[in-house]
Length: 79
Image (cartoon, rainbow, N blue to C red; front, side, top):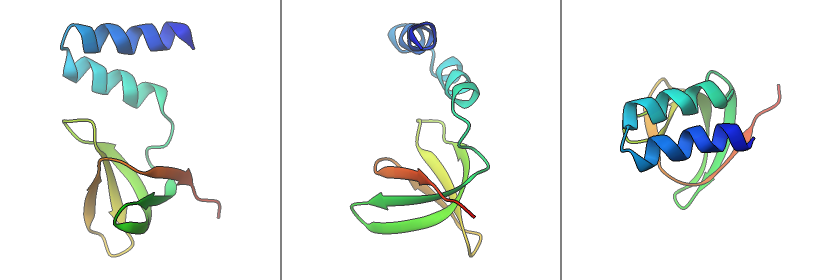
């Protein structure tokens, strides 16, 4: 865990945002998974599509819309 944290910290420290996003994508297996989120705006369900260029989580909702989520609690949905 510390090795992974060090890689992320190093990217942040050096301002290497594309490398940071690539590292996050490789560490988090949430992409492509069904998720439920609780945000200040309310509950949201969909599929974790990607991380945006600024680090936001992009969710594809059941009606096909893409929604950027900057904060909230993400829970992997179970079928």
